[in-house]
Image (cartoon, rainbow, N blue to C red; front, side, top):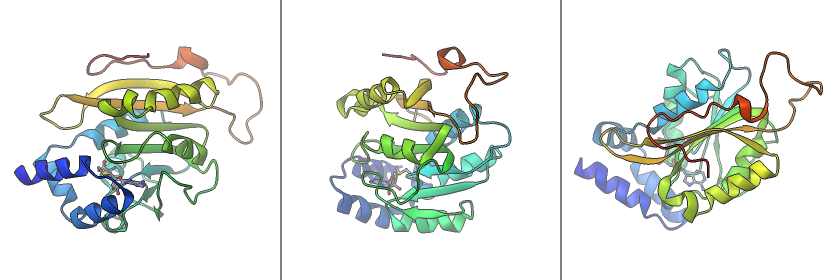
Length: 241
Ligand SMILES: C[S@@+](CC[C@H](N)C(=O)[O-])C[C@H]1O[C@@H](n2cnc3c(N)ncnc32)[C@H](O)[C@@H]1O
């Protein structure tokens, strides 16, 4: 437990890309044990369930796991019946562990704060757990994630409470909503660890635009706009400020 807490403390104080890579190179082999047995890490399962709520039963296309690390989100998705996945992460060591899980098709080493080597509109959905947190990735990555998801695709991610306003996640997402790029589907407060308090937002958005091949006009049998939003409050406050 002490080792796990020390791991988390060190992870939250990383200062640059080099420190990030060195840290995860060192911890990749131990990561799952420290996070799961040591800390009771819940976020991968929680955010995977949130995403699955908005996906059709049989997902057409591939889900991309952003900041996939060792693949805990991939495992949570596969338990929900979602099996076509790619992963993106900065750390080659973390990707090596993810590769051994056998869950992912493609694993891409890339820096989310720069250009990701993936063409536009490639993925049916994107998911990201534990990566928008202290010392990790800022809101600038949101536009890059939205770029690689297809129109009407779903994007689900966690953001630590401390960073929501301070690092500009709120502002960036509001700009994307006002710019007609995203629609907020839900934002729910929840815990990251089994015996911890609510620590972050579990967010789900839909990328706006029309899927290739879909004709203009109202879609049959589907509500559109904010009325279709499932504004659920699962754990505590749901604040749409
Ligand atoms: C706390 S881990 C989360 C891993 C996994 N999503 C999970 O929930 O177990 C954060 C991950 O973000 C990755 N990461 C940090 N900065 C990154 C960046 N700039 N680009 C891509 N990945 C990054 C790290 O390498 C690490 O695997």
